[in-house]
Image (cartoon, rainbow, N blue to C red; front, side, top):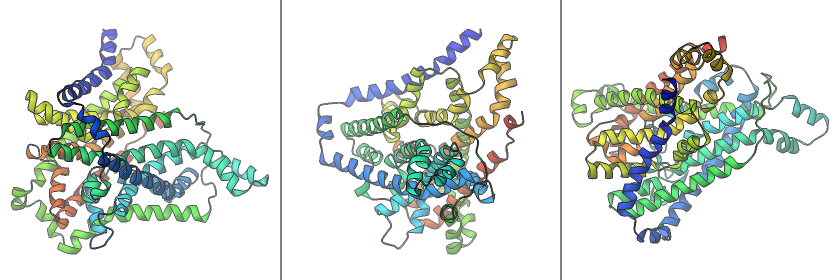
Length: 499
């Protein structure tokens, strides 16, 4: 019985890949023609690539620059500033994209900077720079604090100490964070849609536009280009061999005033952006604006309450199911299975949405079910990535000992794995919850809001009508919800540390 369950679990990655591949194959078979070659060589296609690469690359550079000081500070200090920085680090990253877009529309309102490259990059830097802080700080924590001291005593210049010591240890984090920051900026949808303009259209936006004009060849070409670009970049970054050796961290190591000031500036920047949605509606409409969006009359036109309920239910179910699937996949991993799962990270959410619409129209499968399938496609690789290190590096000796004592899979999970990995699994559930709660690309492209109102689609309806007071008030609610989730996550006792 145990063998059959193991084999069944091992089939999940293959089933996942088939579920993705079959609809893609059916859609491409239906619409692919030689005209697709013309799309590849069009001036517009090259322009989208140039604009996407430009804004993504600038985002990476600026995000790296402003993330360096907080990353160094977080890796070397253990005080109230570092603890606050660490506890709030990923709150912005998991904010609903529409809420972030609304915030920057408000911030740059009545200025010439709105709907420019500057506004796009500023929003992306706020949204994605926590990735750099996280991965660089983790890389630098593997550097012995005495190395710089020894190099200084040997008379090595500060620039050479930085390039040969600090940068050497930080490079894994820089590359990993840089790839993710570039990817999220390159595939940006909500921020470009509301904050940007047509000059800096991403392939995600272009695919959605091609869908509205029913240009399937263009959709296919753009989807292929985006996927191959990110896949190639991922392969290049993954092929670089780096030193990831960890050494114990000496806390409260001395850092200079520039690093300290940079870390504090970064905190102020992130917190300022977070509090804007709280300040704006109350300056313009007082607390009545918050009551307004939950009023009966307002909800007849904009279903705020039902959209929040729908998003909560969908996000909770998604967090539990996707985390469980990711755990099972990683427990039965192989190189082939890893490739099948993680190869879909570069798949366009807009392209997946178009395919789901095609399957809905052609085969009559309910659009809500297909929307959820699209959500699984974009979140399962993320969940697997978040869990990868903890699950793959779980002490195998504990499990082998339990099996030799006659324990079954269920007993091993509830008596050994769950107590030691409980906080990691629950944290993953909460992180997937926040991603699904704010998901917008698939919902917008599929027009799912007509059948299933969601918090993201209602927020977009308000923002696109320039109802900034109401949109900001709804953002307040979403921010409070996401922040509460992270606070709860932080309060969960780390049982693994007490054993």
